[in-house]
Every structure is written in structure tokens, then in C-alpha cells.
Amino acid sequence: MTLLLSSLSLVISVVFLLTISPLFLSLLIILQTITLAIIINMITMTSWFSFMLIMIYLSGMMVIFIYVSSMASNELFFPNNYLLVPLFIAFAVAASLTSSHMLNNPSDYTNELNMTLTKITIFKTMKMYSKPLFIMTILLIVYLLLAMIMVSKNSSFSYGPLRSFK
Image (cartoon, rainbow, N blue to C red; front, top):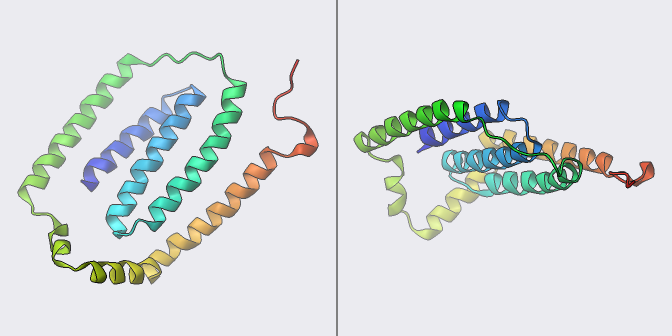
């Protein structure tokens, strides 16, 4: 499943490079964030970091979406059909390879079903602040600080409104 989501993330990244429309770019960033959050949730087996990542990116994207939609409200979106066909074929091949790989190997998460609810809770609580995840916590703190600085600089009232009315 992680391989399928990683290939989806790669396809979203390639489409992001080929897109010009700012509203579609924001949609791709939201999709990329959700895909990355699911991958992080599957790897770390805790949902706190992926939940925080989604909430931070979505709140930042709402501010950017309002700003960009007010600036480029009349821009039309024309998808490039000649680029979407190879991307769809590449994703379909990756999905078929992933599904055949998953059928041959048993899942690593089958042992989790034998745990009781209290053991799972204790395991997730201990793992949340372990040394390998400490770097993610620091990166989340730094990203929150930078996002707060950027949003406060973009919405500064001392320079007037974000969009001048004529």
C-alpha cells in the first residue's frame, strides 16, 4: 500500500510541474499533503503527526486559496490531455505491480490484531515522543513558526488591503 501511495505522490508531483493554473496547483498541494499524511500514518503507526500536517497545510492553503482566487478569478483551466494519458498509464502500471506484490507477501500488520486496546494505546503513546520521531516534532515546530511568519507578513494591515479595489 505504501508503494501505491508513493507512486501516487510521484504522479501528483509530476502533474504539479506541468500545471499553470494557481487554483489547480493548490488542489494538487492539498492532494499531495493528504497522500503524504497517509504514508506517514502507515509508517509511524501513529496519527498525530499526519493529523497535524493536514491541519497546518489546510489552514495555510485556505489563506492562500482566498488570496489567489481573488487575484486570478477569471483564469480558465485547460488540462493537457496529451500529458495525462502517459501519467495515467504509469500510475496504472504502478498500481498493478503493487497489487500483485501485496498478494504474494502477507501483511506486516496482521500481528496488530492480537493486541488488546490498552496495549495499542500504550504502544502509540510511547512511540509518539521516541527518538526517531523527535526530528519530526522539531520539523513540525519549525514549519509552524515559518507558516505563522509568512501568513502574518502576507496579511499585514499596515500596507493596505491585499487587493486594491478600483
